[in-house]
Image (cartoon, rainbow, N blue to C red; front, side, top):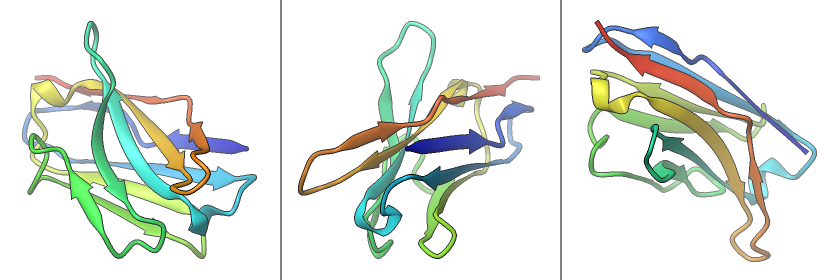
Amino acid sequence: VQLVESGGGLVQPGGSLSLSCAVSGFTFSSYYMSWYRQAPGKERELVARSTSGGGSTNYADSVKGRFTISRDNTKNTVHLQMNTLKPEDTAVYYCNAHHRIFGYDYWGQGTQVTVSS
């Protein structure tokens, strides 16, 4: 099983970044896919989630209207488009796969996003 995130980096406030997570080793279309983040000294929090078919998404209140999660079940990838970034969005962002029925959970290694002028 592999989840490999990419796309993190340094961006100025108000800017945009797009994260990607490439998945292998399990049946991608059977899993909910989510992005979590963890800032220094804080607990890991859910940022956005997509159901297995991609028909439903949900977001943390802090990112609603700014972030968009999308998935491509033909390419086994999930993306997080982040717009109007704020300094408080600075964190390590993790890709997560969750099997709703069996409870399996897989994590990526994380990618750093830093929002600073």
